Length: 384
Image 1 (tube, rainbow, N blue to C red):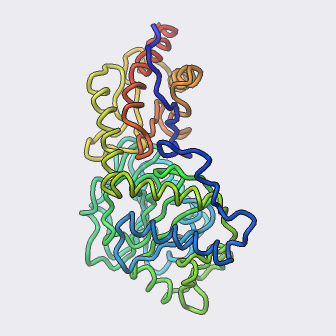
Image 2 (cartoon, rainbow, N blue to C red):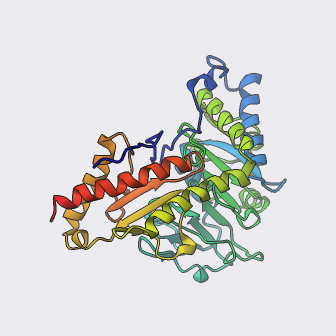
Image 3 (cartoon, rainbow, N blue to C red):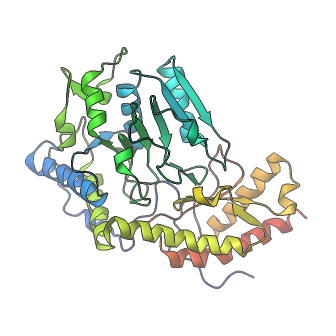
């Protein structure tokens, strides 16, 4: 039988993610549309977004925040192309996005001194192999595997290299050790549920020093340039964006930053995500057909919760049939308007991926779990 109650919101996509509770389009009514982003009103909105980001994330005072083109991807690429090459680099990967950065560094930048430290889906790379004399590039949270870095203890305080961290599904939901992160990137369409297109680039003083003392041997496109005549382009970190931003998106981001303050700031946002994970953890512990893809509980993501189907009937299928069965399960929930876009990422093992970030309500996840059991039973019946 169908469960009696549906989640109030069926939006569990891992990106773009659900808007904050109570969001309506009215929050955009004061956006300075039809005005130049370089006019005082536009620059003030951009600077406000930068300042509120700095405050909400509780960044060190001397860290810089910039709004850059191309979402998180643009922010990461800007860092890779502008900073790498000064010394060897360790590239960490345990899911598709980390693997993508390896491809860019080895096949596009074509750096000679690259070490790849990798792990399969569900596991994490051996962090003890990272050499503090080298730069390191890594995702804090593997969005497509549900595996996060457990802590920053493996990052040396006396490191010579830079740490470049893709934190797009971790920022605002996980406790990041900022003093150990030299370059951090994210897009506000993830944990904060904002609209896409823009990325955030956070630089430590060590990263600024590298930018001003090292010039890459390759040409840099305009949208990647962070320096001019050997000095940081400070305007990027004061609201003078490299190219034209959407003031609608900026207004939306400001709304969600204000909401973040209302729910208790960074600690409140982290608590919401962890409470959401607790709902799913309790259900997984009581359910015999599913488990977390993350093999180590210490690395279990509280935002992109990836699930594998462990039932015997499923394990006896071919890989092709597993993929089809998992897609059928997700489709059933989509058709019932219970959960949209919760299929596993295309490169990940067949299964489900449920967003549990700060904008999700724990009550909706509680109402979702009976439907997951129902959909599993429906799909199972067609294979046995």
